Length: 232
Image (cartoon, rainbow, N blue to C red):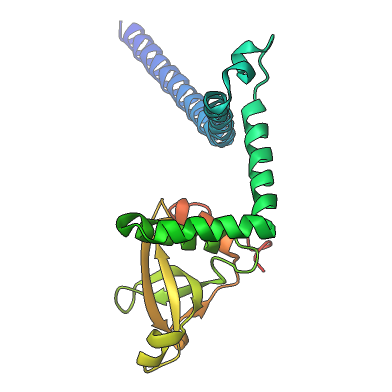
């Protein structure tokens, strides 16, 4: 009788060990599957989101251009639809406008239009700001940001990335006691918003990363660090 009890006890222990091993194998397998799932999301999500936004933008351009076209030239009258035709027409239109604006007659009409806009009280200030922003980002003669710097802000011991927009000039430079830099401090994850501060040049540590790498670092909240091999 004692021997049968020992056999039953041993069988229970063997069964318990087997269940624990099966549970460990299952947990290991589920952990691997979870890791594979997250890796798949990490690989496919940026591509899928980019393609989705690109398709949405192309379709939006098609709808916008189609609304602006005369009735006889609308895309609805075509025997078949061509995705992206509105984007192509829009790009060609902008090229033609740019060619016209570069000529003497185009510059005359642009100055005339600006003169009219500047006479309007509220519209003039909005147009002036938008014009300066677009000229800063799209002009080939200037660069929006020249370099990435690291500085202590908002107090000593706390470091933050900033983008040097320009050296101080004019009245602001005359009023400042030191050699100062105009530094734009972006917000995460939207770097288009932020604030401008004036910092002494000696308080800024110039980084080797490019402006593009710095923007990626800010947008990702510090998750996408610049590759040390690609840093200039």
